[in-house]
Length: 38
Length: 217
Image (cartoon, rainbow over the protein chains, first blue to last red):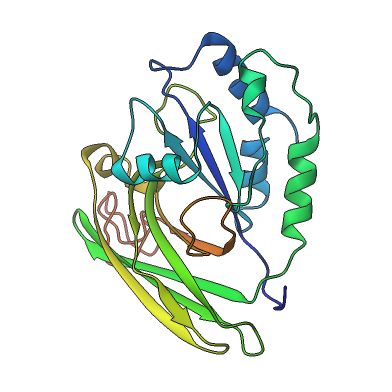
């Protein structure tokens, strides 16, 4: 890759609404994952 | 992780939350199809790969512990020859975004597919990890740029009721992706502007605050 510009990263999340298709387990995963320390 | 990322590096990451139910948009549905999303959550970095193994949510052991931040670091280290500058102005509920997409002199000419997305941060308000909910998106006509060349891409956005009551949390994200029929398709660069925007008054003030104004007792 040529170029010298700093990259801004797009992070595309596909998730389900809380009251929608997400299971309780999936919601827990999201909560833990998104709040973990990077 | 996500909130830390955004708070500490606001210029390096743009998350876009696409809900597959409840808060869907036509553009979001198209993107789910583009990425062939068959399970949630699904997490794509720069259009290249799903960084979150869908099977984990379905009961399989998650095989990539610690992989996501490593992959983020690796991706950020790769320079790009594409630049994007986003400007937003407007009045009332109608805002217009202009993105200037360029390829650096000495870069590689290419075709690019630009997407312009209006998001509402901290929405829905149920959980504090809901960031940048996609409210409206547009796939723009492909552009062809030579090295050293720029193009301007414009799109008008009309704010929905939920955004109008929280204009401070509105942002416009723009990204330029390889014009392929489906993922993986590399995002070459992204940019954004968050409120306040010139000409868009919030809380009665153009910049959203009373700075510079004499508040009479």
